[in-house]
Image (tube, rainbow, N blue to C red; front, top):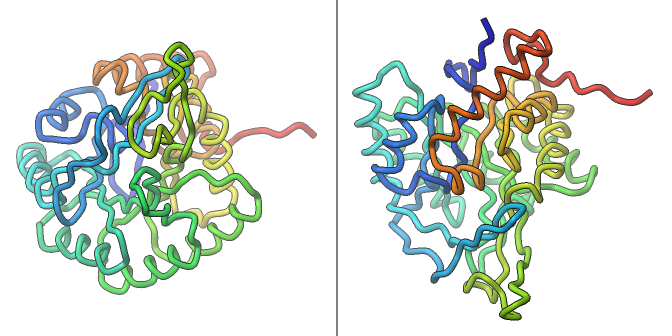
Length: 313
């Protein structure tokens, strides 16, 4: 039997496919739809200390090769997501869930993780270090000293399984520097990558941008970013301690894309742009396609090919 089951943070998941934070996870209705799908789990929208309306509309635009967005972290607040997930957890104690959170400084990160700790949540926390679409706020993940300080500080008090969502990196030196920082801490995983920040998509008929915030600048997702995502997944797979797993995110719309992410070293994958376009039914198709590829290649489980990317000698 072909199995797409996996383990992250020493927790079992029946399938290695789930949503990416920010997509189909903004409220209880969307999270319930994900919970009923063939996705193994879900991750919530990144929750902040207080609810946020986000950037003005239009702030998301689908393109032929992906999407551009400048959402600005619209969310219901971390307390809301913890309540929703804890209710679902009570009904399905066998399932494991992810809660994403993001602060605008290290003190807020600590406060958010304290909320998680006292809430009774038993799943996995994803700390988002890579939101590129909040006006006036730089991406934390590109400030290596700040990342080091955040992780040093939060791990002094937070003891639950914790992963971090990272922006894409584009230089070998940066892979080396970030891996050196990440390897200092007991992270459960890294999620690589978030969207490529500050792209620009133009409607040439109207001769104007397609989203309103930041004069049209926004995060790029979909087909555009798959090569970058694969490079980041494999670069960190080569450099991180073996006990820090990788969730691969970026450009996944079919089973082949998932296979390639796992081949590069991902233990799990998340789907963003394609989920936005197709809805939660996508998980049944993706699982079917991945199993077909594994069957054709003679693989029974993802460990049979995870990280076994070959090079040209």
